[in-house]
Image (tube, rainbow, N blue to C red; front, top):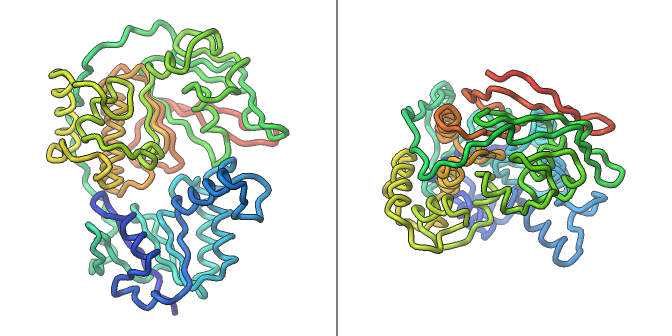
Length: 412
């Protein structure tokens, strides 16, 4: 029987350094037997490399798919990568949080695909959430600050839910935004198609100030399309009956006119950020609508940033370079950066992807508290059902042959 490992990671884990070590042939003792064997990495890092290769050299690395990787949904990308890896016939595969950004049907499909290969391939599963452990895993370890240690805990201990930090209040805004008269977002009978592929059909949606919405739906249902039409990046929004912040889309507003009213966070923002700004300055940049701070902050801005750092438990990292933080801490900082100006609209796109159980619990509590105590409308997008999340309304996209329709449900 093959030994399959689950390596638990948290906000202190140097996951990227560990994966680089494996790719460079440096294996910790429990995995030293793999040093001279053929392996593969199933990771968003691998996907990004392949997509960059396609775009720079027009070289299709995964040749069994008919369209560019970047045009596929997250689930379709991962399915294509997994088939590509299996065709290589590796001795082992490292799975880097394989279920992030996947809906329940895709997760079930992937579990079945991996289980079918468990007799012939050794798997090392890097995971942030304990409930994601594959059913055939029989060895456990934990990665903390780059150290690989065997976990010696009972199963019932490992399944206990972490107790999140209790939040009492969030820092107030530095400046109040003008009160919005009427809804922030109105979609009337919105249709979107790319070529012959229908994405959205007759979407009707209305978001009023202060409302807390969850946007959900399976991979490829059009969630990202809707978000991009709101943030101003998608030309498919023009010619549609869409109103944002009281103005019809395409009536002369600039992308920046729209974005100044929006706080936005997606994990991809941290993945691509390479500036050498301090944590404090990254937070303050949320007040200036820039990525990083390029002007001298005021005392009021510095005081606001310190209040948020205290809330996040990151006071000691105030002057640390943002890029030196672990990915989990980076995401908490970037989330606070999106909230810090108390924007009329806050959009959180798959915000808990890659967070460990304790951080995700804290994050959900942070979002609930912000929605309850601020006047901002919140749109929370996630494939994963996060325990404790309390949206007041849900827009669910239901795919069909003519595109996804939207159904509105009452929240919790």
